[in-house]
Amino acid sequence: MANLKVGDPAPRFSGVDQNGESISLDDYKGKKVILYFYPKDNTPGCTAEACNLRDNYSDLINKGLDVIGVSPDSEKSHQKFIEKYELPFRLISDPDKEILNLYHAWGEKKMYGKTYDGVLRKTYIISENQTIEAIFEKVKTKDHTNQIYQELKI
Image (cartoon, rainbow, N blue to C red):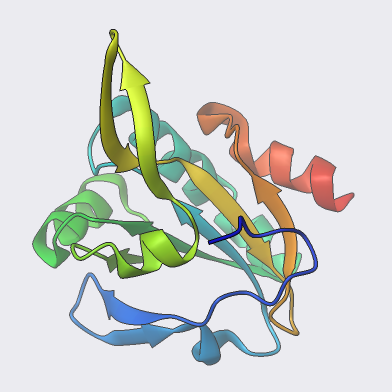
């Protein structure tokens, strides 16, 4: 399966959020979305990224961007993560890695000389007409919002 590129239609997905409520890309037609994939709730890099998006959330909304996070963690784990860090956006639980695979955010990783499969930290900006507007494969977890603003020139 070929990697996704800027200009490609965003793969349609549906899943459940931290409250067990259905969420799909179709819910965001006409809106610009930051769809970010992260490995695990409550880990240092993932927390830094989530908190950076949280701290800039009202500005992101004012600029016409909504935020959705995706990881393989459970709904309960997402609930605790949201409560602990007061995250204002939805997190999708993807234990079967369906959405992760659709967006090429699951694959081979290397750490300490070992190779294993895991979540590839990536962010996609999906336009109002549901095409991919930008892709971030090297996410600056502590400064992700500025990274997005620079790419979108906003």
